[in-house]
Length: 92
Image (tube, rainbow, N blue to C red; front, side, top):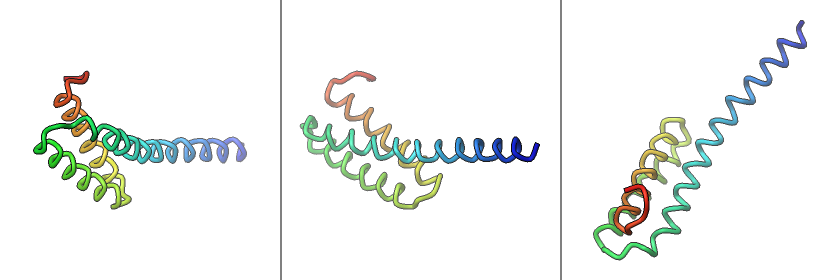
């Protein structure tokens, strides 16, 4: 019985930890996507907005908290959508 409880706790802890790592990875992946898309942006005002957004997202990521990671993901998701709209990509 004790082994089953300990195994259950271990599995639960592992699952909870993996979701937080996935969120951090999504932030990093989004930042990389934005970096790769910067060459497609022609308008200087959009380039400035993207640069400001990336700076904000990196600052959020540097906080190292769940809230910071969530803010980074939200910021980068919106920036990716803005880039796609500006460059005529999908997800308009």
